[in-house]
Image 1: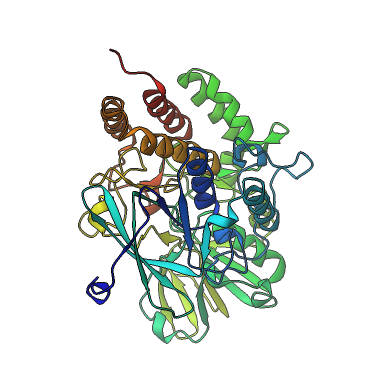
Image 2 (image 1 turned 135 degrees about the vertical axis):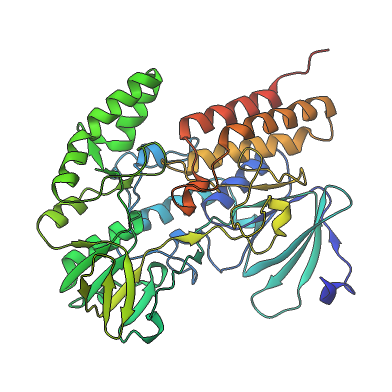
Length: 451
């Protein structure tokens, strides 16, 4: 902050700063405006839509990206997707949807493009000083806000593994976020590393475009088809939520039994976790490609050796291209880690109710969850709760205190063991339980205090 110390901060009063104009940021701006707040939304790129916009130079979209959650489970509650859209919209349709949302609610006038937030710092108790760095090279600006909502998502900082001998590999190694053009796979020998949804999708892309595709996974996963019983799978499973928990578990196991047995017959590793412990793999083509041999599975990579890659089972492959579909780190660079509950070497924030800073009550994060279903409905209710909280926190201290108490009590339900199955597991929430918790939080805000 020293380089800006001579410049006075422009005070925006009780206006709210929203960081990011992707899906979460747009939803935050809309709900804040509906609650009467002035809002300044800062987007480091020159376009809205975040990762869904291929014109965003930081977008991690890979070829032929489609939603892995269905339309009905992904759409924003107060802005449904068109009825004639497919069950699983494409990335271009998703971008069109977000543009329509922004236009319908008049959000564009509140967005400052080409403006990166380089630092936020609490001042005067619960207010914030924000340093805005324009992309065009103009001098940075300092502004003060009544609150800050970080809505940047967590798919921007690649998680890059390092294997012995990798620096001397004679082929091409790239992260999935760099695979902007499927032609890079055409006619090549391709090795895809990583068993999450991105790794599965890219392996399927390579199966039909590359000369050969080898897929390296280090453990077993639950493979969920996109349809169950003639319905989108997540919709079918969502309907089971109305059942008692024991019956829901039994019926879910029955629905997944056939796919579990099929993957076992193909020699795939059995999952080392329950299907509710983390987001399953949603792809209707993967098992078919493994079954017809267009995807050959291998265990974890052991080392790189010149032009070869060796696996832990002793087999080798000589790929032209290695795609590391190894996920992302949930790093929020603009904010001091301590404000987000980041401790030690962990990169994962520990937020109250998965959205509020444990240190400053006017700092919140929207969308930093892995719910196993569409994230946008959860972001809608998160930002609804945040907006209501900011609205009543000064005018109704008693209700604000009850709210804070409810947020703290709800937070214990989402605690995740730090030794979780995978790094992204630490962002996992059970969608049904989390939405119910958000409902209780919102009810606390809307109830009149007992006199």
